[in-house]
Length: 351
Image (cartoon, rainbow, N blue to C red):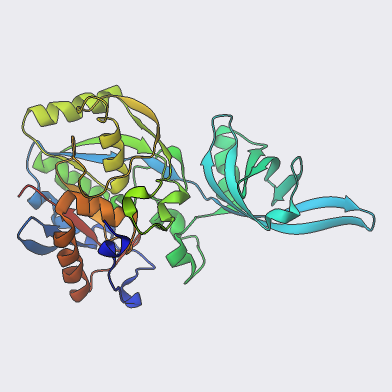
């Protein structure tokens, strides 16, 4: 299985830099094994049935891009250096792993000041990353980030424009609550209150899981044999209640449909040991590529992904590699918008 098997040519004009407004007006490509329907996200209830269950990721994206100053005394007197920080993930000790530019200008034990409200101490440097301990915790830390930070837009958007105030709303799901992600579960960005109400009226059930999406989601695959790729790790949790409700849906013959690859990866992780969904919490590095046997997910709602990415491999595992390449050709020819702020697809591999 070669990396080039998951490549395609994408016109740059189809890379979305702003989302559709309103959210549920984004386009939705509904695909079975043999058919394609072009719709919009607000049509989603008409493609679902009473008793189906959507699985939603309730992680909350933090304003993870920070610009600060490092102060240091020298023989020439006090000097300052501008330091750019991108938070990557929290660690078990309460610190944050981070990328720092320029890393050579900081030392362990130094403080970095981010405006007037937030500062952090460098407690460790290894593997080109640093671990920071902030001077605030809990709600105070969240408030400090809100003032000092900017939303961590994906590289393909950040290369075109800087994050702004509108991204604080646009790059966050309407149900986000568990602080810790540095990238959004973007398939969920198409949901608004009107769509949720329509889904409930249809009899569609909803459950929440938490997977804190990390910056590793944007890392390229660098090996030609994709089966040798080492997947990044992210922290997630499936509660007892959610596991019970998902199992009940499957037992009753309903479909379990994760919204986004993050929710899919997490529920499949939670079923790895026994083949059945169970409560689970920890770090997952599950890598899903063609040949994978799905234990929980019956379908998937997801955005359109980067060429040669692990997410292209995941959707190919669900629908078949040849079918996915045909679907992406359809999306390109019909000018669907791609990536985090782009349009969505509903993939139904069993129909």
